Length: 481
Ligand SMILES: *Cc1c(COP(=O)(O)O)cnc(C)c1O
Image (cartoon, rainbow, N blue to C red; front, side, top):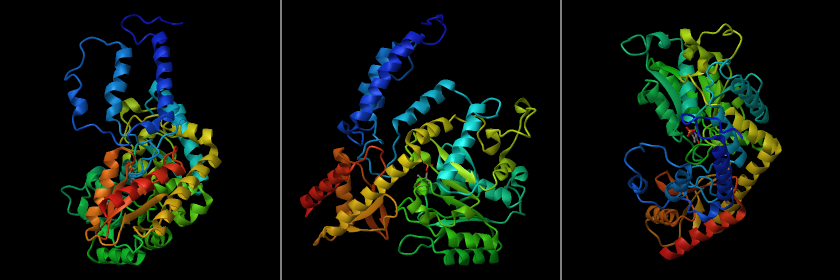
């Protein structure tokens, strides 16, 4: 037993052990008994704030008391993303081995900037991302880098595309220059807001983002893309990047990547594929058809923290040529200079962050623990459950499907006979279920029609959870008609 730290040191290791075991017990119960909690936190706004002191304690507190407050104060204000009936937005969840990865990463507390300061993080990241690349059947020339979120991955991809345009923006910037044309980034109308935020952050401005029309399956129309590019070139603008999405946020629709790659190739434009949500399914052979042509991309973003049971945050950017990012961002201050710069990969060279979390560890745990086969089985089951739910919708006169189901997201709405305002009805049904805490659904608008979205993705979800939602929906509709 080492209790060697004096009063100015850390918590004695005996206490760390004691509380550590207690926390693991608590988390094991949490995972086992998840369903006893309401999915959406039921607290009122500012409930937690009003129950906490307004300033920090002057002297240290007993950790037992602090831990007690997690139950009393924090738990009621937690929305349970891991809950099997969390179907809103995209259903994401962590596996318990993912939590172990976070524990080690926190304990090591390394800042992966230089290889030297973090060989384990740097090398494990390379190896795990190469495993994932192979699992997704991407060609060998793709090299990956881990960022926190897809928003940040995509911002870096757009920055790389801009770097590739050779406008010396790294050194001269864009402001005060009249030799820089309006740059254009293209995506569909159904993209994630992170693309808008990316162009805002990079100083390109929303004016640079051109949203291309979709067909009735919510997929980008490549001919419209080519027309837009021609028109922009005619106007003296500079197309720098096209961003198709495989698995859009609204409906999980799939832009035709191969045809879009043809357009990018013709004009020499950077092709970045946003598949933050659906990218995980590229490990499932029968889903590869949705990714046809993605091997032609310059960059691809996929989020293991979304649908690969890895705790938030871990987003991967794969690049055909990672050195473009290095050209855009590498900046080696004197105190960071090392003699091995030319031979090692230093994470800090590939983005705006200096220190980077040791995120690869949790993904390594997840991939090793479940194996490729285990992950494939789980994704297949989620897609099967979503299709099953869709079949119930299709078979009912009171409900209708609003979009195809390529993955595990079902877009549908209530449409009982004799109701005029279907938008109001669907909004009411959804809000009522969400308020009950029994399940969480979210919505989108498709052609002005209020559409309920049900995402299946929790590692704890089973068929009975979908039956439960289906019963809740049908009870809500019979209340109202
Ligand atoms: C979820 C999602 C994002 C944003 O993911 P973050 O990691 O939270 O930034 C971007 N694009 C698509 C298609 C998504 O599904």
